[in-house]
Length: 326
Image (cartoon, rainbow, N blue to C red):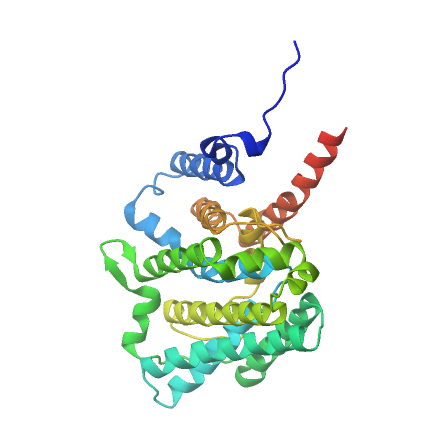
């Protein structure tokens, strides 16, 4: 007896949710959590679970902005270098006695300036974002190396440590609360506002969006600004947590952030994706890296795992499409 599958548009909202990428990713996250609890007797300790959140909160803050940028059809590979430059700027300011409020403003301003620089090169000059941000990735980190060399900035104000080391209640860190607030803001921003709909429209058909009256260049410039701003916020949290600044800070984060976004279901070619998916992907990657850390797995193996995840989530949909066509 032949059976017909029900088209997606005729399925109930609950059925579509259960068959979504986010639901599958949530099952993966639960499976990893259970596997970690059996793999290490220390995993279920409340303070260890709290420490596990530091593996992804700072990266996820940038990933939310990166998700919007990739949905629009662009990308920013300079985010880790923006962190290095913002941290260097804060460190230099701390050496001359600038207080915590001033350091926060400097970190945010540095991120915004770097994001604006990328945005101008892409939107005003029409340069490909991947080429531009590969260049600024070297530029921003190169400036940090010129300023610091093999030295490090220390001596931050004592109250500056709260951003990366403080706890709001019991084991709930300030960083985790900030991550949750930013996730809600970006979720509303992307899924419940006209601006979010324009981001999807641009990613699906930039020419059509332009002829529909959408100011494509301005929207993309704002997205680069947001990515720079979130990099500045991440720089504040990371510098506060480490208590020092080196030019090598956050090296390799761009790979992990892009992996987090793509693993969350954002199409690397633009046009689709969701913030809930990125949130779940952040937890998946945090659980994976923390679990491997508890098992004393070397960092290079973790890099291999992250690289493998990125290749897999890009290749699997294409392989699935080819298999279905056959």
